[in-house]
Image (cartoon, rainbow, N blue to C red; front, side, top):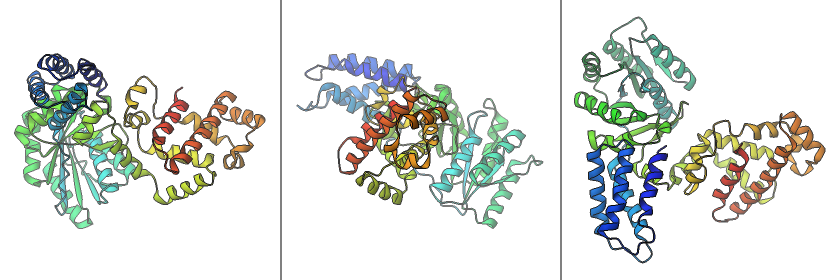
Length: 447
């Protein structure tokens, strides 16, 4: 995400490289490119102009320390202003009701139904809440069926009345059902249209008035850029919603919507959708997003994702194995599977500072580890437990079984040995080894 914006901002900062100090002339030249980068990212020109004026004022008002170059200072100031532009801090959902009601609104095709299920899955898994999904898109039978399918996949009950065309009545009865059954949160998926119209707005407004939800969330497709911002403004004028959800952010290389919605509607971005899977949803943190836009990575989010997937007891057991040099292919496979659960491999590696540029043109999709897994699955239990016995004839048999070749098997065995050494060094307190290990893994999936 934001690849184009990151590239253009980096070029803008190059103007100040090698400069001894900040001056009005070199700052003006750099900020001209920054403003152009923002406009190219589909940021409104007035917002881009105001942004660069604030950056200029801050940059010229600061002394450049001996240890900090003008270019570094400019990056710091731009980072501060990007964070401010997107909202400064993350704002949590209000779930104080009994049950708490979350009303989900947006245009048709924005990803409302998918987000509703993702939110339910997030609340169930991360917040330990009993959630009820409610299908109030009474005009599209496919939307009701989609919500039923998604609810079944994530293990969340879905309340539907397929023959009823009264969304307010459905929502009220669903809330009563939630109270009876002990649901703590009710997520209401509503109808949308291809464009804003009075009928849709009246319906959503009626639902909000009848339900008095703790949270009204507006869902918008990030890839529509300024159209997303304009739609967000129109909805807010009628609904006065509590927060924005940006879907399809993984496909947005420009970033205009993420950068400007907060300043236009004065409402926080609360979540972003980053894929189709049920867990492909991230809480929005302005500072971390500014880090990623400027190519600084997002190591905090990476660590949080790792903590969600890696079992503490398993980690202790692995550390003991590493200390005794007993790390084997079963452990290696287990670690790969844990990494896959964390999300898209390329996005994860992009969170490591300095790695974004290195993997920009590398093809790393969700199937990146399939070849490695096939080779390991072709090994006998004894071979996985004791990699030292993998002689030439065994490697040849493994390659045949995996539909691969012996060169790929040899490459994996070497990669495994290197990874085992790095992990052992890291377990003894070696610094910077995790980044090296990820680079090593990268080499194995670049096919």
